Image (cartoon, rainbow, N blue to C red; front, top):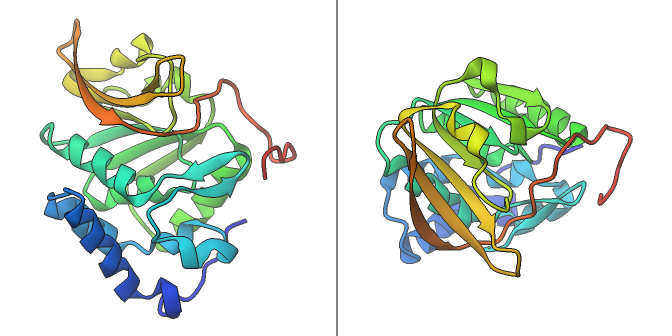
Length: 229
């Protein structure tokens, strides 16, 4: 279970977040909405207390069950790409993980529907997000590859795990004009971040560059199956 730690201590102070945001801007992230959201949200709350001092480093960190919280630059790239597509009010997130990106999406004004397959992560994220009192977040334990049909249509679908290719069923949970953002593995070592714009019948693909994510897996993992912790 993730534990809240005091935000003003040492390497997890607000000044540390300021340095992280400055490094993101230097790396080419120029969307002030994204930078402001990441400055305001204490990232160290979304990792284990033992890793809190590393929360603002440019690395991904383990969160248990073989999963990770993506490095800040990757999160910022995805958020900026999503906002660049136009107004997004309702978003489906495949892979809640620690809840960090979930919280950022909500703090950027979106209503977020997020699915997590690992019960332990789902419960921990739900507890933390409730403590932070972030509105417009709906969480579900389940197989994200199936989407959330009874809450569709969405303006956007965002994957936080790598898939072999875009999953056709999820396009049909988008409204016409919506977008799907997914890391995709090509069967080798390389992964590419892809953005698809859906017109209701077909999707236009845009390659946003290299990325690195854990793979999207089917099914669910119960609380007792502490694999990869």
